[in-house]
Amino acid sequence: MNSLWHHRVSIITGSYGSGKTEVAINLSLAKRSFYGNEAIVSLIDVDIVNLYFRSRDKFEELAKRGIHVIAPAGDLRHADLPALPASISGSLHDTQQQVVLDVGGDPAGATVLGRYQADLPEGSYDMILVVNPYRPYTDNVDAMQRLISAIESKSRLRITALCNNSNLMGFTTPEDLLRGQDLLGELEVRTGLPTAFVSCVPAIAPAVSVMLPNVPVLQLGLYMLPPWATGNNYAGEV
Amino acid sequence: MKQRVLMKGNEAIAEAAIRAGCRFFFGYPITPQNELPEYMSRRLPEVGGTFVQAESEVSAINMVYGAAGAGARVMTSSSSPGISLKQEGISYMAGAQLPAVIVNIVRGGPGLGSIQPGQGDYFQSVKGGGHGDYRLVVLAPANLQEAVDLVTEAFDIADLYRNPVLILGDGLLGQMMEPVEFRQSTPRELPAKDWATTGLCNHNGQKNVINSLVLHAIDLEAHNIHLQEKYALIKVAEQKAELLHCDDAELVVVAYGSTARIVKTAIAQLRDQGHRVGLLRPISLWPFPEDAFAKVMPVAKDFLCVEMSAGQMVEDVKLVVNGARPVHFYGRMGGIVPTPNEIATQVLQIMGVK
Image (cartoon, rainbow over all chains, first blue to last red; front, side, top):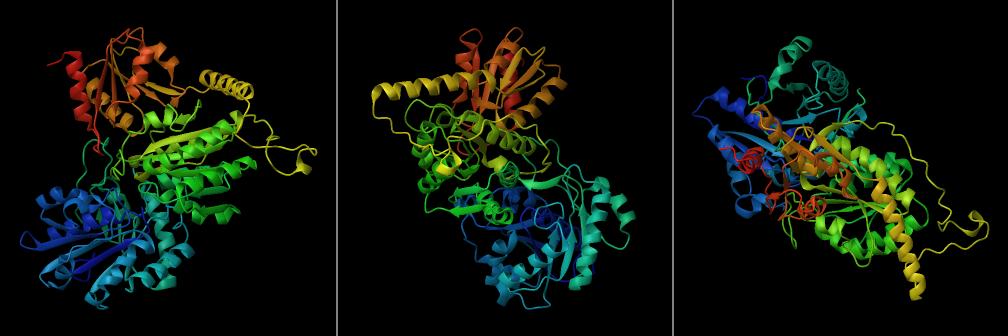
């Protein structure tokens, strides 16, 4: 088994702007690379809150890399409507599929998960809270704890682990992840939730591994880049 | 923790407003600016401020009128169709000389259009979207740090001239994330708001009236002349532009907001290939930065205006250049964002490079 997940279904949640989509895309790629080319890996975009920088925007690109993106089709792909394809339930029940759910931000975005509560019995999924303490309203442990309660209440599911995605985008240093881990450490103590992994760009991954030797690192290839960014940095490797 | 915070454009604008002393926000939801009122609804009560989700954009702008009239720092925000609804109120505020900051996070138009980014509201912003002879100061940030800094300054400009200031962003700027710092700015010296309706006890028993109705033609003309004199002052004092690689630029690209950042990427590529291309980025769209054009004119042979519209700012570029140089245009519409390669191709065509 891989250290980044324990179950077939990984649910990626958190506050908006915490980096859920990058984590979800790269976790899908990690699953694909772990299980090999025969594996069916579905990335389910249930983000009905956000409207730009969504998994569905990379539909074609991810398809080429063996990831099946499930999202509203046709015109609905470009809308911010609470419309979800029926095939989501199919993927959740298909034991042959590896599934990653990219959930909308905040309790508002997590509400959509409540719809799938019956498809997701406790113990059948990992539900990972992505945390970036450099974002407003998740910059302290009390706020993180409130977020956990609110997301669990709206989604009717249990968060099972944490992801330390401390970052200031291009300005991120390994020390930023270390400082973030201090906060997550306290959150671990208070909630009993373990840190499943830290996530960062490949350039700082070796230094992060040295500083945080007990936590697996998910290297992030960046997909949600603005149109003026040059060059892509596709890693998606563990 | 560092001073820098990772923020979404809409959030950064809201936080900057609060730090500039804005304590009132009235708005109505519309994509892609919803994070702005959402952030305000959460944050304003923490600082003793007031957030109201009005029943419509028309109500919201009139609440802004009221709060500004009482001397408060106040903001509203919306996106294209919602800003259209606010135009009557904006004209009233310009007429009554009320300071406020209005944010337009532009989407694709016309009509309901799309929720993708656009720059099709340039005419509406700088030519007076409402009725009557008035001007808004229009500031167009190209990154989130600049958005933060400009919002801070916008409140000062509004108070200094007693005039509404419009922050013109686009969906991309509202939705993207960047680290920002809320730094101390050098505050301007601002006149006391002795005109505000704060109660007779606060202005020596003298009655203050906020109004844009002037029934006598002679009085209304005098009022208009006063406004025009004020706009003339602003035109001289408040021009802002960025010049990049313009010292030796034979071709100057003119672009604002998000588009200017894409142009920068294109220019970096073109410069690497040895082409003498520069960027003139208007930051104030009104007043249009005419002085910056005067600086680049001696070397520039051609201008290329790039917009996410059918071509609106290009008309102002032509007015400034006044026929002295060819002014070309390249634009995308409907929420399509041009790529650096598209822009580079246009530049090379104009420069006659095969």
